Every structure is written in structure tokens, then in C-alpha cells.
Image 1 (cartoon, one colour):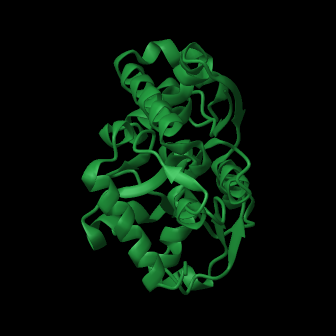
Image 2 (cartoon, one colour):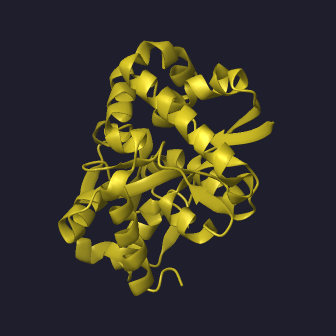
Length: 267
């Protein structure tokens, strides 16, 4: 069976998908084509149902559930891992409505959290996540939202954190923050979906036990090549929830949807 599979080049995704992409699926009878894109590109492709199995933001998932099924394995969901709103100079949250904000994609959970936290913030510049610090450095943006590897290195760029949106979420809801997930076409039916989910879960468990096996694959695609940054990234975003969302994970997703609907962000 032919499968198109897509995920981001970020260390958490490449570490989890390494074994699946390089042999586990083919050994199980699947012919796989692998595609790597930044998360916002993946979100946009998901609107068109481009790939059979894909990583997307939970915000995007709320918009594409009619043709994609959420997998219980592979999610980025947890505590202390939310997006950071930063700036070149100290600012108060009350200043945000007057700021030009660099946002790492319109369909990212980072943008959804910004809309929930500061609905009055309207001057947004949507760019790929790796360009947010570039816009801050050039002065094209007053503040920006950092995700992925960028959240570990912003202080080196002399940026100041205004608000930790994940921390805000946790204080408001008491839930872990749902950032990204893996989805599969509903047209596959239960058999293929369950089999892939189980294979991915096996791969994630092994990647956590034997991280060195995926090291080269992870390094080849990472935006930041510092070993300590890569390790921090994987440790933060590949968690027990990545192995299985469980009841807690699904409750957090339901809370995110409820808040988004109440705020009028989704219908």
C-alpha cells in the first residue's frame, strides 16, 4: 500500500518518525513517500487533504476533522512547553494591541493562543517560525511568538519574554497545552489507521530509549545544530503524551476547542 507521510524538520518530529520513515513501515508492507515542511505549510496542505498521514497544529486539526482522524500517538502536548511572546525591549502585556507581532503561521496553535490571550492584538505578520527572530532583529516586528528550537535561544539574541502563553494556558485551564498532532485520512478505515498508530508508538518508545540511533537524521534537519538545544527540544516535546494522549490529553484538546468556540475563533 502506498502512503504519503509528512512532518516537520523539528527534532521532536524527526526523532519520533526516524524509524517509521527509514524502514519500519516498509517492513510492514507499506511503500512510503516522506515529505518535510514547516508546520504552517503542513497546516495549509491539510486544508486540502494533501497527505495521507501528516503532522499538523491542533488549531488546524479543529478545522480539518471532517477528513482526518486524530492519532493517539505522536502528539506534542504537555506542561511547560508553550509558545513564548518576546520582544527586543521590555513591554507590558497591555502594550500588545499597539505592537506589530510576528506570528509563526496563521493556523498554528501559537496563533490560536495569542487570539485567546489578547483578542485585541490585530497587527500580525505571519511568517515561517524560523523567521520570527529575524523580523525582531530587523525591526520589522515589535514582538514575536517563538516556537520549536527558537524558544531555547532567544535570550542569546537579547530578546525579552513578555508572556509565556503556555504558562498562561496552564493557569487558566489546569490542562497541558495541545500544540501539534498526527492525523490520518479517515478514508483509510480502522485497520490501516490503528496499524500505523501502533507502529508509530513503537518507534517513539524506541527513540526515547535509544536516542543516538536517530541522532544523524535529527541533526541533518534541525534549524539549531547545538547538541544541547536539540536534546532540550526533544525532551520538552516528546513526552508520555506523545506515546499516548490518554484521557488527560483528550480533555485538554476538548478544552482548547471549547475556548476557541467561545472566543469566536472557530465556528
